[in-house]
Length: 379
Image (tube, rainbow, N blue to C red; front, side):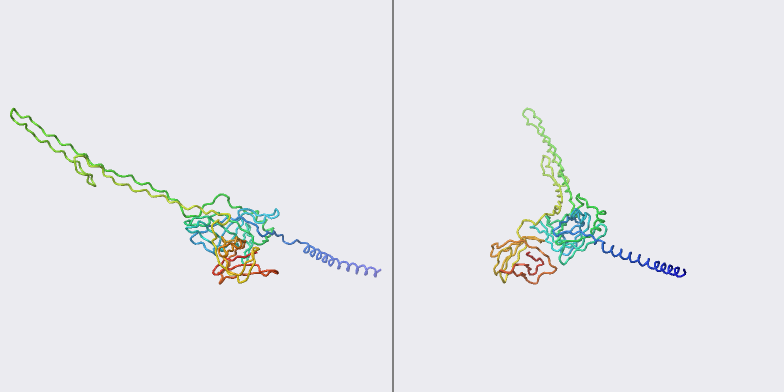
């Protein structure tokens, strides 16, 4: 009997000691399953070529603007991918001017090439954009007078283009969308310091009349007696008019003519130049970039074979794309589209980069020009 009680106690102690180990193992196994099944952080991929409409939050002044200056803007229109908000309106954007062409007395236009460094969402979520190979760029073409004090005004709209895919956190973007406020669509107060001035009217002429003269008295004739001559008493001569107070009139019996003091002319009003107008593309004037390059070997570009020799390379605007004309001896050889890229430093010499082909001459890959920052890439 004592033996049975002892065995029972041992069994009870053994079972009691094993139960916690079993529960702990079960909990550890469950945690491993939860970690394994937890989904990855959701993201939204904006494809290359996505357009984002931006409105400037500060102006670009014509007197001081230069390459390297910062540009600040805000998204003016939402961007969605697969019915999911990707960039809500009211997202702030920071950028840098890469190249700038200002208006002249002969050309009333300005051109910008800009790359963007950062997106700041309304909840503070920030996306850094690569700068070595710009992930987002904009080319702005502006119609503006040479005498204007601004090149881009408050609220001026430009279009940012994604040059490569961009990944954003879906949860953070959704939180930002609930706090975002789109900028107003009505025109904002212009930053220009030019204010029209109304002209002043001129003063009328001042006329000081002269005094009229007085008539003289006639002679008095008293008839004489028979055989006696008439007696004539001479009359008094008339008195001349008084001359004007300031300038004497002409003498004589009649009054002097009036003296006229000319009035002062009015001052003309000042007319301000018109506001900047952002255009959808470069102006249709002649090519404003003309360079010359020598191909030491035959190359192929745009389906055309170019023999060894010197060629003129011409295009309009600062990119990000341009239609490039390759001429030789005044004749067009080929017209092909190329990407315009702004480098940080000016090239020390002309440089022609090519890529080899299995059959035929190498294909033209890129061009750099001496003392220029603009480069052309042929895809």
